Length: 341
Image (cartoon, rainbow, N blue to C red):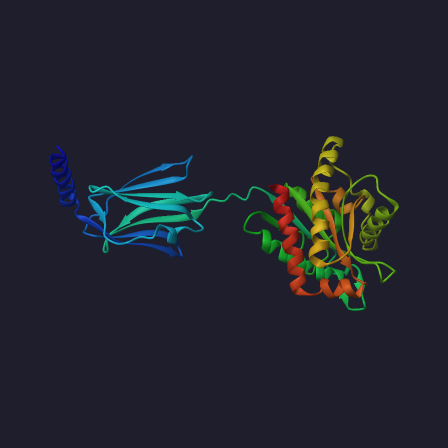
């Protein structure tokens, strides 16, 4: 009986091999554009494909084909492919490609030379919009430290680094990306027009006491401590200085939205001030609610980050260092990602 089965299996395998007229001589991955390519011998490059959307599994069947090369499946795992398996059925070659999340594909065949190609593309939908607001700009230098460091320059640099960190994952809108003057009311209007999900204003603090140091983050609140009220009044005064009545910037959200947005803003502010202080080895001055005009006018969650004190020598040495600016930007971006997750 066993010998009969052996003979039967031999005949099946022999028939399958005989039927296989196409050989897959090479399987390769191109990077630009991203493609999975099967190089074939023979004139025909026919195939069938199906896709299981739930499991993100693309199946290709290449009839009358056998694999004529060694393939190390792990070498194909990367940005587009989570897993690759090739199975030789004798009468056909089966290819199982598990795609990464948010990856689309297109399959087609080519001749001269004969090959089957799977093109990959990113289908990431940028679900959230973030407004990055570098404070001051143009005729408004913001705070000035030691006669040469201007707040407007430092915060613009950090803001651009934040944009670089977030740009591939989110729609990032800058209220300004050059040294131009933007009124406070216009900044919040930019966010509202874009229906942004988050507003992050970047600033640097100042004090008459050069020993004042550290990081703090503010969120919009109709009630504030005397200290927070003083800081908000200082920032709002720049609008008044350049001809804007900041008192006319109305809170456009209703009471229910105000409470919800405040809760969300605090949820971002608290971990951010902690990690910035830790990474930059600066004092953690905590989070505060205050009536900032630029936050009051935005219809959504928002924070105002004070990265340090421009008249503190130790703070300024970090605030003006591009390496430290990138660290600050990276931590801001990381906490924004965590906020949306």
